[in-house]
Amino acid sequence: MVKVRIEKKPEIEIIGQKIWISGTDDSEAFEAFWEKSHQNGLIDTLKEINRNTDNKVLNSTVFGVSCVEKDPQDRSFYFFIATEYNDYPRDCGLEKYIVPACEWAVFENTGELPMCLIEAEMYAFEEWLPNSGYIHANAPEMELYPPCINTGKGVITEFWLPIIKK
Image 1 (cartoon, rainbow, N blue to C red):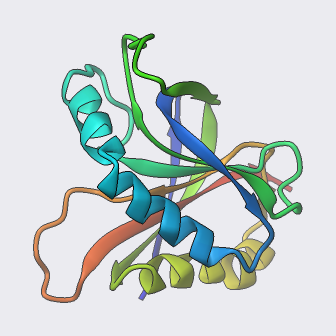
Image 2 (cartoon, helix red, strand yellow; image 1 turned 45 degrees about the vertical axis):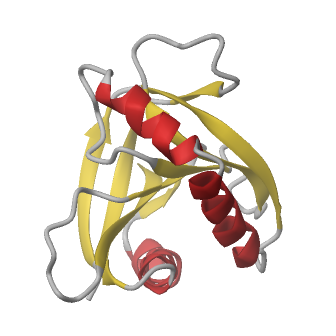
């Protein structure tokens, strides 16, 4: 069952690598990018950067950011695998990006990846948003993976939807 909460967060500086996602049915591109990022050491690099970062805003070491801020209806966009940072390591070959201060609807779900994340997103867009009194803000969407206590039911994921009142 998807749990929902509303949070306000300040601007967040992130660093990572991105790929272009070309449409709504491109879930395999996300999965392949995550797998490649584990294999090529990007995830380990981001975890190390995160360990050396103070004053973190998010409760996730490594996360995904869908850059849909120009047009949330357009499901072709850049997708980052990233972490927060304080001091930009200029020689690391990573790109920085600023997630703006925003109000977020956070959809938490537990289960097996990627299904539990997809379920949270579907609930957000198909059930919650149309009945909420909010609309999608012109800001990126995020997928977070909080530190997980083994619940025996899978991993905890959070889909962060930027929102503003109608």
